[in-house]
Length: 153
Image 1 (cartoon, rainbow, N blue to C red):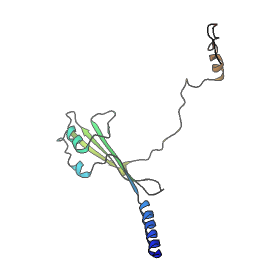
Image 2: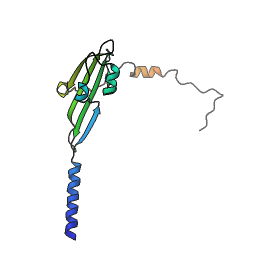
Image 3: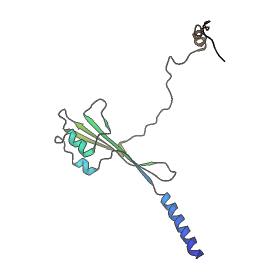
Image 4: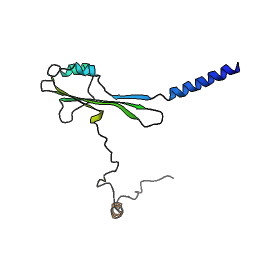
């Protein structure tokens, strides 16, 4: 009786440890499938069709509103290790003035570059006062209470 119970507990613990070591996969953004992208035909389909097939764009071009970007990334993380990128894709759909697809450009993980962010701050003028400015700035700020004002402590 005691032997099967211990064996069952050990098997349960091993299964629990094995399940906790499974990778966590996260999908961020919109990763259109290749089959969906193959349905898009240049010069034939409109913005409405693209929206119905792929959904709304992740963003629209800043300077050219006739470009829709579908941006997505799939990452995987094992336990305490650093997160790794499995798939990354940017699909740019360019439209002509009539609203039909002009051309489609695809970018994947190999086209991306890591950018080091600079965390320093740029000082702005007008927010820091020097010692003289602080002393002179206080003159005239404090008024004596008039006789009609009373304070209770």
